[in-house]
Image (cartoon, rainbow, N blue to C red; front, top):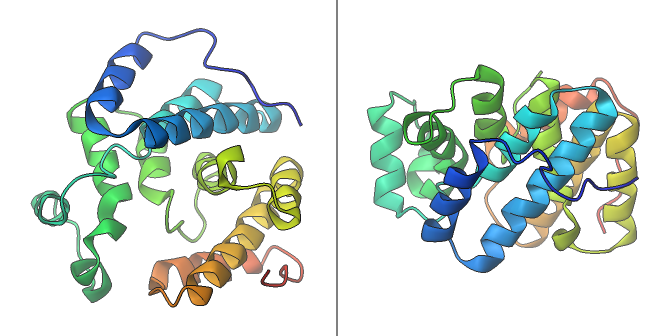
Amino acid sequence: MGFATSAKENPRWREPVLAWLHRSMPKPRLAHSLRVETLALDLAHHHGLNGEQAAQAGLMHDLAKYFKPETLLAMARAAGLVLDPLEEAYPQLLHADVSALVAQQDLGVQEPEVLAAIANHTLGRPAMAPLSCILFLADALEPGRGDTPTLNHLRQMSYQNLAAAVYHTCDYKLCQLAAQAKPIHPRALSTRDWFAAHCSVPLPCP
């Protein structure tokens, strides 16, 4: 696999987004967003999807990552999102949905596929579209996440079969959450279960 080095065409939307990110997040998180952009672009090209949409979703996926909990809750409620008890207790779970709102309201993104990919990048969604699968995988598997045999196997799988890669990556993420005794959102489980119907036996927990 060969990662694309950047959004080479440097479309007009990119500089305003970079300026927004420089103002709104620390350098390590910006570096993560750039790596997600690069991997999402490469995966999109490999799978015959819209590269610019993938790069756009990748660069903007964490727009609300550093919003205060009360801001996340207020914006989600104002947008009419139905919050479950886990999201009320852990508002950071809303950062993906709120990032999509910011992309639309502040940065002018209108493509439903891009907005859905941003909203789905953390918990996934049953039957989510290929662009959402790509961003879900790029966020979880970008090179900064580590260099373990499991992660490298998942990266290879992401170029071979998106549905299988999403299922196995869900399993990996759920194992990590369980090992850290962190709460697991029902949508993460339903995403894993939906993609399990299209895949083989899960990878073991590391």
